[in-house]
Length: 206
Image (tube, rainbow, N blue to C red; front, side, top):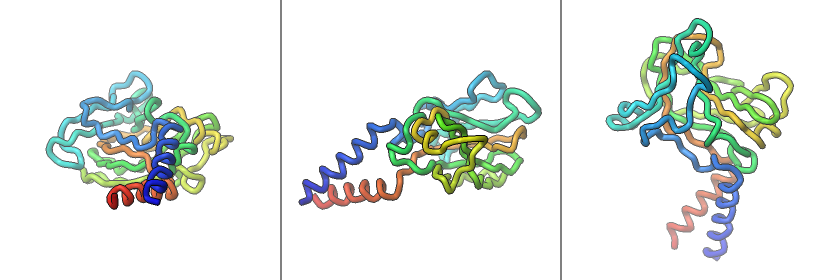
């Protein structure tokens, strides 16, 4: 019975992982790179890997990103990823993104997700308020129908089936700001999480 149950869970997890490369992915920036996060073009404020001072304390790397206000390149606080975070979120069973974030500037932030794909663009309905206190916070944002608002005529299922860009940003427009981000992680649907937890329980009992 245990072998059958473990096989069923492992098959499910493997199938989900094959459906999209984002399942189980965590960007922790410990390799000294930006891990595919950028701004999409030339900017006076490109995101940078900082080797020390993340949520884990001394020796914990994180990604620093900033905006300079005004107009043009670098005016908005936004980072994007079009490589590891592209794919079929529905098939993968992903319904949220979690991360650690710190406001390193003097402007209070409103951090949101923006997901762009085959069905159009969607942004977080309720952005996260991040005060300008330099403290790291563990937060999460949903990517389901109840958590996202559309930007123009869109089809959410079509977008989540073929995401080509994920942004983490303050969507209010140009502002002077600096933030740190770490441990960007895909959150599974509750059913997927239950099966993975079951697999771990079975392994412990073997």
